[in-house]
Image 1 (tube, rainbow, N blue to C red):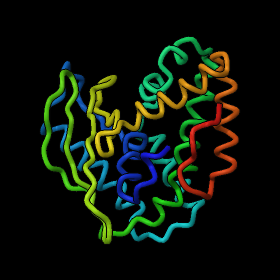
Image 2 (cartoon, rainbow, N blue to C red):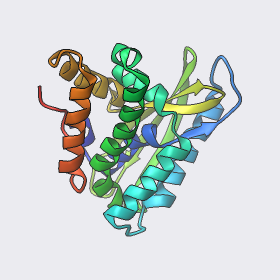
Image 3 (tube, rainbow, N blue to C red):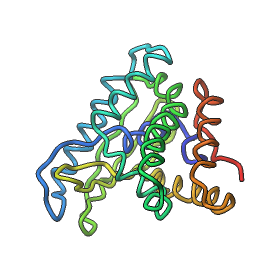
Image 4 (tube, one colour):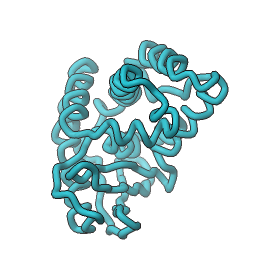
Amino acid sequence: MSMLRSGRLPVLAAAVCLVFAVPAAAAPAVDPNRAVEVVNHAVDDAFKTFAGKGLSQDEAHRAADDLIRRYTDLRVLSAAILGRYWTAASPADQEKFLTLLVNYAIAGWASQIISLDPKDKITIAGAVPAGETVRVHAVSTSPGEDPTPVDFIVSAADGRLIISDALIENVSFIRTMHDDFSAFLGSNGGRLEALMAAMQKKIDANSVAGAPAPPKK
């Protein structure tokens, strides 16, 4: 996806929405201060895990997989990405998609996450309530690159706070993936199995490369 090609920190920022969800008390709306804590916690954990560690690609894959499975509400994200195709899918296909989504993300980001420098930063610049969510404004900086605006959407789901989206230069990670996958499904009779087969091909082809391109129609 084009929004994931602009550098290490934007890639990490987008990855955070798939990697981290922090437990919290259920609430109808999100407290901005708590939202900022969630984002800071997620970013700190990501840097402690990857920045300057010199992990091999296999080690980075295992570390990212562990973080994803410990902290993420993949069902919430999958429903947002697939929309009506998620609700129409069988329980078996939903479970298969959850696993593929994790591997699809890791295959795209592993090589770039490995190269994270401890000098890279994501700095929180404020938080604004937006309905039942909070939009946390941040700026990513990396040596030799222009600062990049990044926003994190923090939501409440099943009694905890999750980072449910990340926007790089105001482009939504979840919306972009939703549009890509919906376009593919619309051109392939709405068959989720066709999308999952295309995702698997991208996983196989890009497991040691950069971010995977959307499946071709």
